[in-house]
Image (cartoon, rainbow, N blue to C red; front, side, top):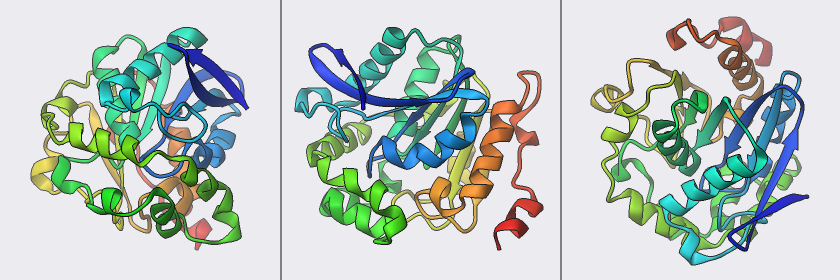
Length: 262
């Protein structure tokens, strides 16, 4: 296990591979651990980092650190401590919110942005996030198979207040303005069958910046990287390989990727 101290508190992270830097930020359910297959896939060309946010996994549990601005401060402190520059940033759920804030404020440091299940307003987030326990959510969304046991195992470490505090704060922000602040190329991924984050409607999709592009995973729930791992990792590879002068709209899910996993 790798960890650093930021403001006298533990930040747990893991790193894999060599090359250009890539940072993964997890959602409200689970921890860094479910990123392992994606980290392994991207590690052939990138140095991949995944960390536990405050209140999750093996990072410190301090309620004063749970507001969104404190989670962003943790991310910035981690980046500065590790000396990471010109990196790709991938955020999922809560991590997508943090990634958007960070990319909006640091457009010269974030090379490209990939969001998964970014909530288009508090109304698009299921009440289950606060009515069910972290363990119940993990059992429901990951399933109880032996293959997903490692992803579920960290859910018992989650402080439920880290979920409720961030949700309460997100309900007060202008979610429409945040995507419009993004200057870097961005890819927006959603699972069609996500029970936690509603798929955006046409009016909500209009708030995605011009440099952004939306892709839907038809067979996925809240975790496209686990529900359709081959397809997700092929898309991730294309996302990381696209040149700065190319449009994100060139990216798509190719039919041959789908045929391979049927």
